Image: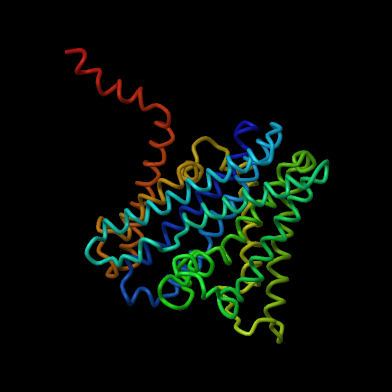
Length: 376
C-alpha cells in the first residue's frame, strides 16, 4: 500500500491523470477522424467525455490551491504573504498559457491569425483562477479570526462558485461588457474577436466556478474533523454528487426559466451542477481506487501522468493538432485513430516517467554524459 502521506496526494494525481486520458481521446478523435466517422455515436460519446477534462483540471487546481494555502496558513504566515506566494504561482501558470499561445502561433506561421495569440485557453484560465483564489483567500483570512476561518473559507468559496455559475448566462448575453476591448472581454465570456461568446474557449464565466468549488472541497478535506473520518467524508461526497445531479436535472425540467436566453450545454447553472456532482462522484471513486483498489499497487500510469500533466498537455497538442501530427488529420477511421491514441498515451506516459525521474537531477544527467569523454 502507498504510505499515508503519499496516499493523500495519490488520488489527486490519479484524477489529474484521468483528466489527461480523457483529454487525449477527445483531441485525438477530434483531430483525426474522417467526416463520416464524426457522424457516429462513438464520436458523440467521445466528445461527451471531452466535457470533463477542463472541469477536472480546474477542480483539482482548486483542491491543490487549498492544500498550499493551508500549509502556509498553518505556518503562521500573514495573509498578505500567503497572497503574494499563491498569486505569483497563478501568474506563472498564466504566463505559461501565454507562452503556449506564442509557440502555437509560431508553429502555425503563415496560416494562423494573429488573434490566436490572445485566445483564452485552459492554461490561461487556470492561472487567472489561481490569482483570483489568491485574492479571495487574502480577503477572507484578513477579515476572519479564530476557529471560524475554515468554515468561512468553505462557505465563501462554495458561494463564489455558485455566483459565477448563476451570472454566466447574463455575462454571455444581456450583461456582456461590450465596453471592454475584446482581448479583455474574452476572459469574461470568451467572445474573442468574433462578436459573440465562443463555446470552445475557457473564460472565467463559467469555468472558474469549478476552481472555487475545488477550493471549498480542499478546505473541507484538510480539516482535522474530515481527516479523522476520511472514508465517510468521501462517501458523503459521492452521495452529495448524486444529489446535485438529480437536483439539477429536476431544475432543468421545470417549465419556467429565470434567464431570457437559456443554453444548457454552455452557460446553464444546471449543467454546471451536473458536472460538479459528477466530479464529486469521481473524487470519491478515485479515493477508493487509490486506497483499496489497484491505484495503490505499485506503478500507476494515471498517477504518473497526473504528476506531469502540464508537460504532457503542452507536448501532446503538437503531435495531435500541430504540424507534427502523427496521423493525417480528418481522414482516419475509428480503428486507426484509436491506434494513434494508444501511441500518444504511451509516448506521454514515457515522457511523464522521464520527467518525474529526472526532475532535480540535471547535474547528475550532465555528469553521466560527460563521463565517457573524461575517461578517454
